[in-house]
Length: 68
Image 1: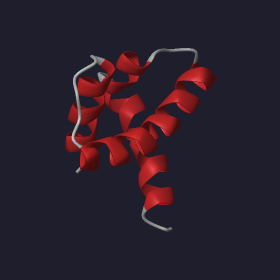
Image 2: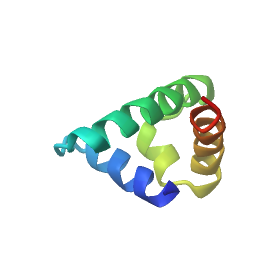
Image 3: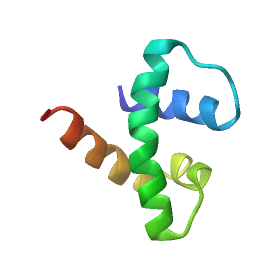
């Protein structure tokens, strides 16, 4: 699942179209990604291509999404 979200997010950032199911999951993930990027002063692709940063963002996303 983490690698699937990563792949879909990269596609979205590169302006590729998403299915409705992909769009819902990725939009929620992208909110966490945008907040992380604002705090760390980096861009989305920097995080998506860096395992350490991506793992931090995905961990936040997973903890919130799977609790509610």
